Image 1: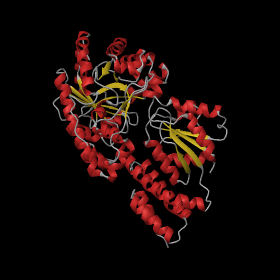
Image 2: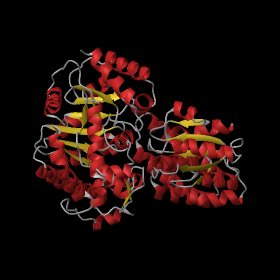
Image 3: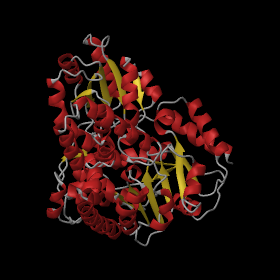
Image 4: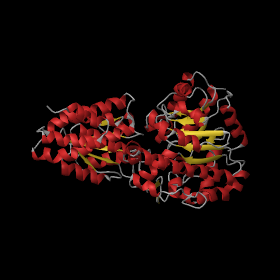
Length: 211
Length: 344
């Protein structure tokens, strides 16, 4: 019987080396990749989110848990693809044009991957056309926009307007977040969802696509 | 900053309750040049535009205190440029600095810069020196040495994600990085004081401290901020508009006696957490109210803020953070008028 608690602890404490080693052990022992996600990564990242919400975890703790998760997913992703396992949903994510900050976006990407979503991370300073192209290529159900600066917030509206003009708005939901963003701002620019922090991103994405 | 404004600040910091309560705002790029009608790049490269924009704001709102007064800045590029970070300028965007540390091991090769000669720092100083006669002719003095704080500079040199990850994965090297940055900051503040003997305050801006736990703050924040602020000036002013709960109880120990914080916390909470020892500059929501609200929203918010605060000593009314981009004249006038009317 595989010790999922030990694996969850490695993710929770951000011990990437242990998480990778325990992943290999699990796979060698016949554990299914999908069970490692459902019984290991997802509950561990949910716990990370809870600890963050309760003020016990801070950004560095989130970052190292995310790093451990990412390392595990690098091993699991090809195995999941080979077995034809469906993800919880497909999301294209990026920091909007003109904004070079990535911390919030990276945290959201890690949380979503931990939640079983297939994330296409376009990085920083992403032009609307790149979001559109990636959403088409990956058949994304959600586009996530991040901004840290008040000066780059308007690029979110520009992007959403561009999605509408490109004719993809009807089939993708848009979720936004970032330090200066508020719920009222999200509503005012026509976003479908707003995440106050990375910890809520998985629930928000699930709500948006009805998963 | 005018002499009487400086005296007002000092009186508030010493605990006097003034009537009406003073108002004050941190103003800088990007609000200032755009409000005054200049592109950001012109503000940074044209001394006349820099002077004119500052004087225009002072003349437009004579009863408020603009903080820290005329100050040396090239945005977030100022200190990182001395470490070799390439500043990137767009016509009307806030400049940013490219990372210089690719991996924690690069810290081994990092040298402490010389603020007298390296990066943009001599330009910052010279611009102020060139303008000093006109600044003084207009009745103002340069009162503050200003710098980004140690964690903020470190995060610009490495990238915020990388820096905050490395304090967990490579803590020893991050302490080494912060020690080098802080040694440099001590020199940089001393150099500003040497160039402008009228300086009697230090302002450090560091919102990265808002993202770490108490334990990490004690390791990676407290000792370095303490050192950076360890200079003999009357006002030790700290700006952190990220969460402030963790660092607030340590501010008196660091020497900070004046704080601008964000909208995550109330004035009463901040007074409680700082033991009532730190004068507060805050905290109407800058974006939702001061920039995007109506004058009526501003009036309501200032009124609510005042009615909620139990102890009005050590308080200067402001927004929670610097003046937000796009804050219109009418809202700022309403803020100042409402504060004056309600605290007369």
